[in-house]
Length: 434
Image (tube, rainbow, N blue to C red):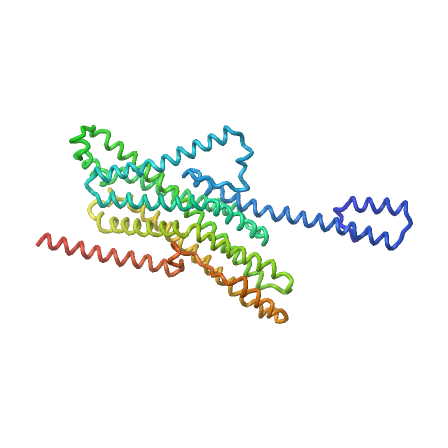
């Protein structure tokens, strides 16, 4: 009875009583030993299942800051880790009211921007802002359209983490993504604070005082600047929340998938027995499927993020370099805009490209698996060719594969067009003076 597990006290108690009242026999001892071993194995399996489920729940709980940002945009993503169903009806109705109010704050600047497009003389600037706001709204609606698929992908990635027993510090990751969101939003607040001391705000007030709304419709000139400030605040603070939430969720999932690919690669390299590769291959197959579903969900949204970031970075950099020579202090708010768009552009491209590189290394390790076990070469070769043909890609609207070279191409494009526009502007100024 020394073989039995120490935790199986019931088995030991049963065998002790049985040995007192019945004569010893080899058959009885064998049956008792088998009963105790079965009980021990069931206990160990249940303990491992409970231990592995902890990773799944911790991974889903680490997404709470991002889920809260999506909630502020009017999009509620319900995960198994949330306790919404346990709350009372009053709490649920309150959450719905807050979500509707936040969604109204996001929609409100769109109509005001259309109003400024009609009222202010700078149609190009206001029209470009209106178009950018419309594009970012379509990115948000794309995520809303695939919200159920997004929940399934999050569950699937959590199950793969559970299968691989990925022991990561999810609390640290949660704090890091929270700091990323806070820092990005603090740049928006800094931009907005510096805007109130800029030259553009003064010029907008002068245009509003001489606009058709004041001269013909007899609207008081004192209220128009106030409406302009309110619209700018709602547009800047509200429009940045969907951008930051989508970016944060994308880079967090990309970083987590990269870690899982690296873990699978490490396991495949250290395989010594051919009896354990089925579970690793199953995790790899599920992770590739989750990555492809993730690309289906985020490909259009990430394309809009990259496009708007390049346009915003170009406009802010051009204004900071060529238009602030006379009064740099009055246009300092462009620095916050440059840093904000630079962080979004680089974080999306870098994390996505690193995930693809990790996935390709893992795929190469999977393809080389038959050479590690020559006695099962034919079986592994057929299995890999049948089930592991799908590529590992993250794209921009299913047209352009994200790679490391995309970052250099983006900055090269910005520099090229900046030089061209600056050159054309100098030629036009020389012609005017002549």
